Amino acid sequence: MALKRSNVKVLIVNTFDRGGAANACKRLHLGLLEAGVESKVLLKNKQNNWSQSFILPPKSTPPSLNEKLKTKVIRILKGVKLYPIKPEKQKPGIPFLQKRSEKLEMYSFPHSNYDITQSPLYQQADIINLHWVANFLDYKSFFLKNTKPVVWTLHDMNPFLGIDHYAEKYIGMDTHGEPISRSISKEESKINRDFADLKKDCIEQIENLTVITPSRWLAAEASKSEAFKGRNVKVIPYGLDDIVFAPRDQKTSREILNLPLDKKIILFVADSVVNNRKGFSYLEKTLEEFQTEKILLCAVGSNVKLRSNDNLIELGEIKDDRLMSVVYSAADVFVIPSLIDNLPNTVLESIMCGTPVIGFPVGGIPDMIDHGKNGLLAEEISVKSLVKILKEFLDNPEVFDRKEIRRAAKEKYKGKVQAKKYMELFNEILKA
Image (cartoon, rainbow, N blue to C red; front, top):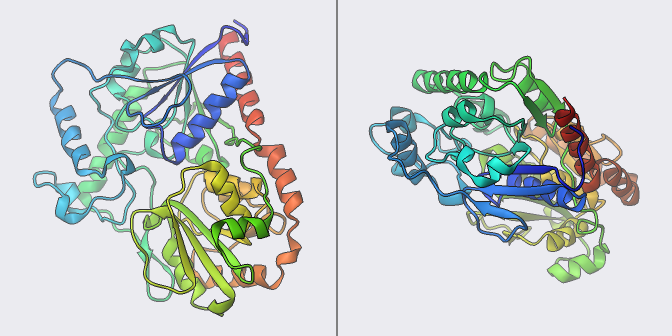
């Protein structure tokens, strides 16, 4: 069955319509619509007005014991932000929660009170494209009942881990600027193993499954996992709207944001500035080594007020993509000190605006940073390494050609490039 622009029906499934994974999901959806694919999005929670997006109501049947446990856990989480749980809000009777560090990324269980296969949108679709489906996809019911080809776009490691969303090795930074290794309790290890086995057993029930990862790193991790070992795993990077994310005049951008014209501006962007995995503490400590009167750190993100600093400006949470392109254009460099990450949208956004990037050599970040051309990669995760690479940039900022950074980014990450690759994949699947 060949893919035809006019009648192929793709159902994209995602838990939320906000956040990094949701942004990537939306960009693919809009790209497919523009290319003529009949794409629809099924959501658990909807706050924005995406074209052709719909909410799935929960099942009316009484929830199982596992579903009740999962519901109790979710109530502890901070709404749609889903960031680490504070110790005082942990519930008794769930031992692993009591020992899990508040610095870690969120966790989720593979149970839910939702049956995606009962949605009319599921029944009408030719292909199901799962995305970030934590707390939405009920593994047991979905993989038992599913009769459609499934393309699963991974945005983190959760689909093949137990309850974690990233296999975080580090949990903070010591006084020397080195990462502190994470210690995992026996209870947490057992829970992770048990749920990883459950996921594997559920996923084994489906034959027509293609796994898509935005980065080569995540593809390698998925391919060696028990859940996806031997499966068809392909890499398709995220795509961006190159009209929205475009270079703006730096002087004008700074004037719009009321930023000084005579300083080097270093930009940090994350949904949550205090998320341990995003590594903001490494950047803060790094900047202590520089003449701060010549440098200004701009932080974009939510959740908490940072410590008072004359050379730090908090721009808060910015939801408008066009305004974000102004922010990237105002900066001299974007620094992403993530300790583990997939293919961060922020890096793509920065280089699409022509702004060079500095980061640690982790996850999918080396996929995007072409060392010496559109940014610089530190040698390792440490403040010492970040100080060295930032000094190299500040000593020779003219090395980076912002027009060339933009040109190369468009060639690889333009939204139409991503949509075309997905269309080719759908064509291949439906022909089989």
